[in-house]
Image (tube, rainbow, N blue to C red; front, side, top):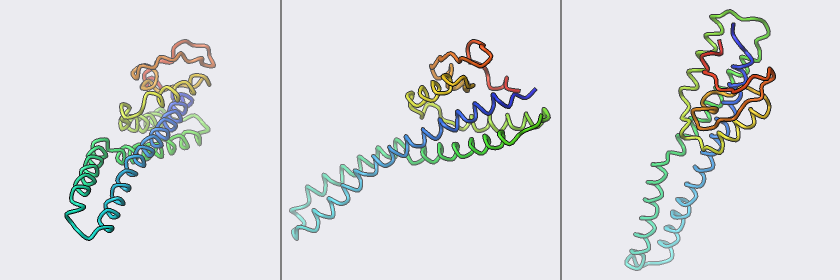
Amino acid sequence: MFNKEKLLDRTECLTLLTTKASSHWSYWKFVLALPLILTSSSMVIINSITTDANEVKIPNIIVNSISVLIMSLTNSIKASEKLDLFHRLSQQFMILSCELEQIEEDISPEEGKTLLLKYETLVNQISFEEIPQSIKANVSKLYSDNSRYIPIQLNGSSGLFEKNKRKSGNSSSIELSSQIV
């Protein structure tokens, strides 16, 4: 039998996780863009205050070097790509959560397998290693403290071993997501 409660909890948990990860990478995208704006502005100022090109040769080289270094770091970190990925996944998990919430009657095993497949497909797209441990711990604790089901990726494989105080009083919340059906 399909367990809607487990899948809904895990989907909502991953919605929150990917939303927080999206916010994290949005912050870093901003932090990395700010120095580029400053170096570009300083180059304009340096070049506009003097008429002799030889006077600004060394400052231009220094500012250009700093800009290249910052761009290299930005390309290496790929904050924009991570922001886009986590934002898109957050929206898709939210859509799946809404779809699950609208189910009021028992569903067929085939429909349950379809919903589980959607969930598994989205989970496989998450780069858990790109989410800071503090965010994973925060979300895991929030769901554990409220007796909600947690995806295995947050409770076990990520190094977080929170015990879930489930409504039924069962012990550890470490379960494979394929056991939802």
